[in-house]
Amino acid sequence: MLDRYDRKINYLRISVTDRCNLRCRYCMPCEDFVMLSHDDILRFNEIVDVVREGVAMGIDKVRLTGGEPMVRRDVVKLVSMIASVPGIKDLAMTTNGVLLDKFARPLAEAGLNRVNVSLDTMDPLRFREMTSGGDIDQVLRGIDAATDAGLKPVKLNCVVTGSSSEPDAEAVKKFAGEKDLEVRFIHQMDLGKGEFSIVEGGEGGDCERCNRLRLTANGKIKPCLFSDTSFDVREMGAREALFAAVSQKPAYGTTCSHNQFYNIGG
Image (cartoon, rainbow, N blue to C red; front, side, top):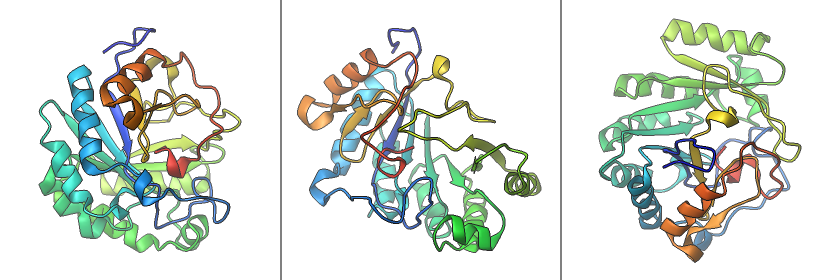
């Protein structure tokens, strides 16, 4: 499936919830946010319908995001449903890792291939401050559980404010080396100002090579994270919404004023 700029679109990121059990300040502010109602959030069968239609069009890589995907009830069942769709070659999840100790093995058994874990510091006090009360030990146990369950490669997503040579990032890099993990450095972004850059160690942020679409928790297909354009799968149907998103995928990201990271899937 090619867009109008001859980019092969084969990657669908799915936000399964806008809820999260942490409040990272760059993602989900401690106030002034509005949660979706239960009826607004897509049911599992609706999500899987989008996946099936996407696979028929050339999607073969799916990533589950949030909010925090593991706070969605029965998320293991959803993983199993998606993993059973013929044509999916890579099924991954981005998580803050807090619940990974509990869910790593059931998710692996359900068909999840790998995980990316958000980790911006190795300092417990800094972590608690950055996440508004999070416990880094829960995340570290989750990383070990993911490795033990075979969810490999385990990748760490480290958000940096300046550069990957700042102290917190260097500490995460050292930890990754000791644990044989991969690490990606993501420069802090601003949706409203259109501030983003290419991910160090990854492919995100490279508009010329972008191969992804996004499905929000309330059923909007977004052709670009940094755009207000979206197409509603409930109004248009999954196939038509996907076609529209591919046909309207912009050459480059601009700004997004209608969403925040916690409700768009990052």
